[in-house]
Image (cartoon, one colour):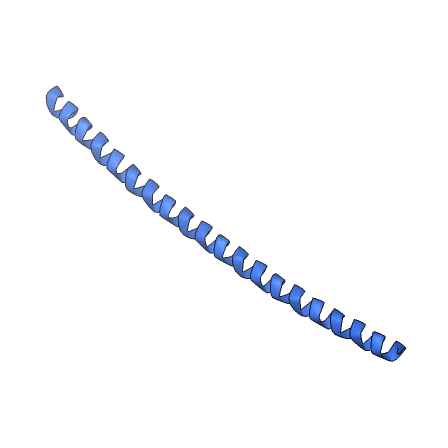
Length: 72
């Protein structure tokens, strides 16, 4: 009878280990997905900021040119 408990205990440990590994893999996949989304969002925000800086520089140069023309 004790041998049966040892066999079932060992089998239960293997099953528990497999379940833990699959849960860990699911969590890692979720983490990697979140990190990829965060990186993509950061790139989009950086790109929009860069475009806004270029537009701001163009408008500033245009207003500076208009002031120079008015001063002449």
